[in-house]
Image (cartoon, rainbow, N blue to C red; front, side):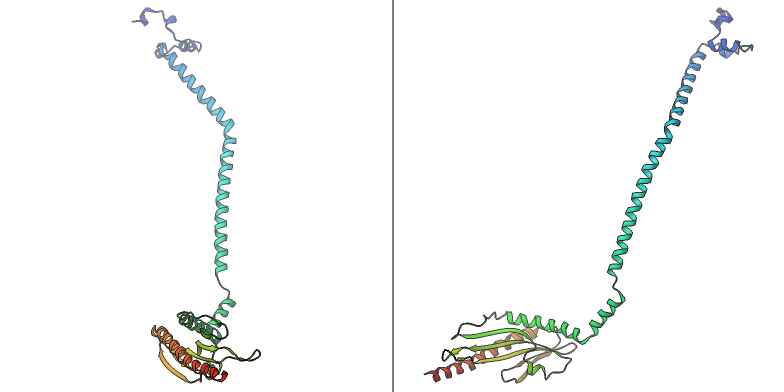
Length: 262
């Protein structure tokens, strides 16, 4: 109705006027007023997209290069960390691997008699030291006082050790009592009595406990496995018994010295 009241030239839209310049008949849809608005927004949107693409094209190479640089640096750092881990693992692996020469030396030590004896000796000495620690006796006192000493020893008594087979290992708890008497300024008299409670490995898996007294008489007290806990108590009782016996002998000697000094 509205279009019928307006002359055709006045009813043309801006797009319709542009269309008339082509010399072609104007399509009916170009006569609608909203065509101009649609065309305007379409043109504006197209321009905005074009500007955005233009700006992105100008800036994207640098931006892409920056992102690529960051990615490259991150990848390089990760690769360096991985290489460092592999290198450390490789170094520790080689450090923990003994050489053939070291393996041969370890096998020699394990098979050699000296190494065997050192190992067994340390094991036996630990027992002897525990026995001696039960008494906790002082060292040498002043002259005129009785000395009592119980201590762990290796290689004593020598005259007994020499009589034993080479493949045996012996340690001992030395029981010593003594008395120092001064007769004159230049003369010292020190009666001493020593006995040994012996602990020996006489065969693989077999220990022997015995006493080698001050006269070097040998008496076996116990035999059994190295893990036998009763051997410790046997040695403690033997050391106490030997101390009492030696003190009795020392008493007789002190009384003799006293009688001679009158």
